[in-house]
Length: 219
Image (cartoon, rainbow, N blue to C red; front, side, top):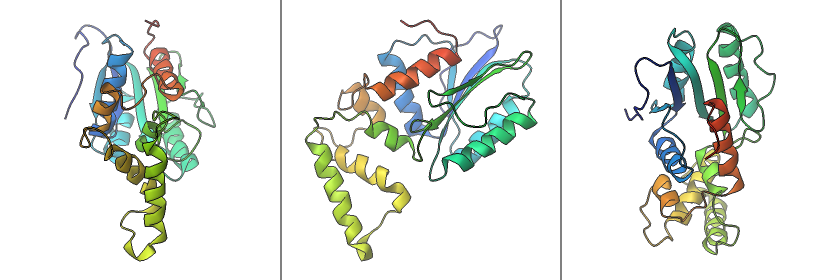
């Protein structure tokens, strides 16, 4: 398991939990780009079930200061939020909102750790990390329409379709990556290489949520 170990032992533990390695490296690249201070750990939990289990356990931690989680909304944003809301309320967070904040949810209750939740891609629509990454593709990128066209043509050939409809965004972003100078670059490295725009509005919104959650001043 990878982590960003940067908090002194005599300080409250501040964590950001993500689902997998792709999420981890996308965050590493964005945090480096925005020069975010190293005041919290990032841990990838190898899937949504382990992440939610850890989330529930950590909420009772006596040394926890601030805890953020980033999860895919997948095909049912409302259902995902209801599950998170149940965990929060059963852990004593009486002010857990009915709906996620479009800017990223941050909950502060007296006597409880500060909690933040980000639903990929943007807290508003169903989707996943790959949908968020697609928001970082330049509007003028000539390869993106080609990637979209290829994926749509594959979908028409139903007997040859080898990916789930729910994974269409994965197929699209990885088809786009195949056309880059270095096709095998993971998504996090594609940000560092500037194939993707770390200054896109969706990236800025995510970083603003991070700053609010961990009480960081803009650089």
